[in-house]
Length: 251
Image (cartoon, rainbow, N blue to C red; front, side, top):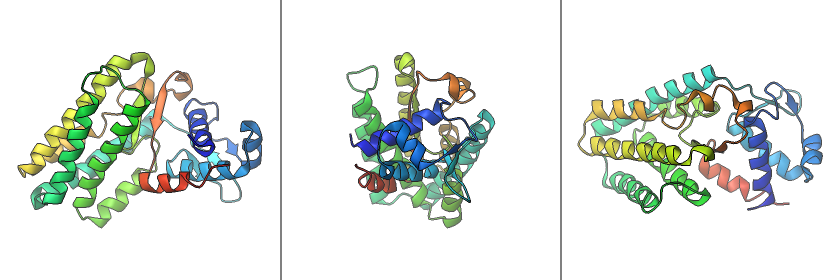
């Protein structure tokens, strides 16, 4: 793992755990000194955390840590459900192309392999789960070909824990978390079947229900400072852009 990636993970955890308090200012130089790194990885990490909705750009200088509340997360997830439900309804009415069908089916097949022969996930399985989850959702959203919907969803995804790319995983409840992710996978299977069979209403309802599966428990959202033991994979906005940026933030 690159030093730049480590800085990103460290800062993200500090925000989620409440070590960096909501509303507080954060700047490059003191943060670099705190973590013992150069300013370059700090600068790039700040940009990525802003995309994830965890930092807000200060009009004058530096950034401000976003205050995260249960209400904010709940409202953002509700909006996401409506928008992604509309995307699923639209693509079901249009009918899947062969390419879209192959991509979605491939995501389901590869994700299914992750659940074979284990009852909990490690880092590698979570990374792969996230990868195929992002592709599955992006294929449906982009397939709807609705510019206004995509713009609205991109805006909503800037709120913390709102996007399909945010996955929480509590190491202290590994078995129940594994089952929760498996349930989300089964939802993907149902959504796929509804899309293939052009059941627009069913696809919309399933997608709306699915939108909140990754952040449903109040203990994961209402008190972030009380969750230091949680392993939070917050994969943020624009996965491909993040991958490109991360390659540039090595010391």
